[in-house]
Length: 85
Image (cartoon, rainbow, N blue to C red):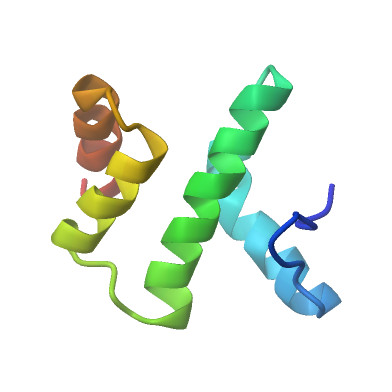
């Protein structure tokens, strides 16, 4: 699996490996390609907020979840409760 996307790929193999260790809890349960794509997008947002910028506040994570789940408040609430537990 690679983080390559139409937007940008991680260049460093070490960073790519660390990202997939971070994303594994989201990715391992995915059954369909669509689920995997959504999990990767969510993991990228979380990785960026937590690791790159250090802005993983409840407010910024909620904003990111609204991007991933635009019309699904139940999914936002469920994921948010898991993330902040």
